[in-house]
Image 1: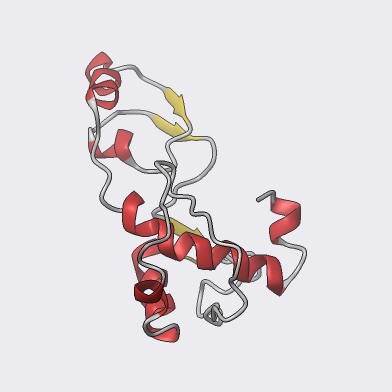
Image 2: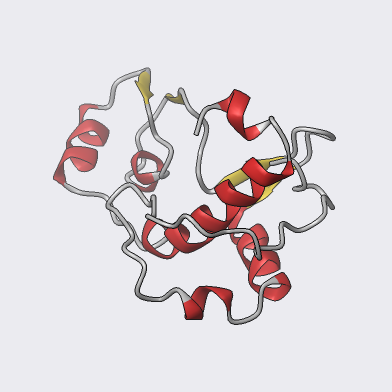
Length: 133
């Protein structure tokens, strides 16, 4: 989903967060692989990466710049407050009891995306630091 599509309104945000809520189950369990460890071992002064998953940081890569942000952090587009993704995940679970369990058979791809078209019943939590995230 593009940024423009995400900011187009509540329906797009609901679709994004419903799918992301399911995909987080895979992404949060990811571990660094030999490639991540090799980059850390280089000890470079600056590493620019698409480190959305935080795996380079988990390996201790110094001087890290993540081009696309981090999936482990959420920033509200309205108030700019930042919070850990795990906090938002817990809020989404509380606001959508049984929702993830009812969709346990939905395929979660390696990048954390899921193939889910029907998201109209998903409740996106009000801000408190994460509303338009």
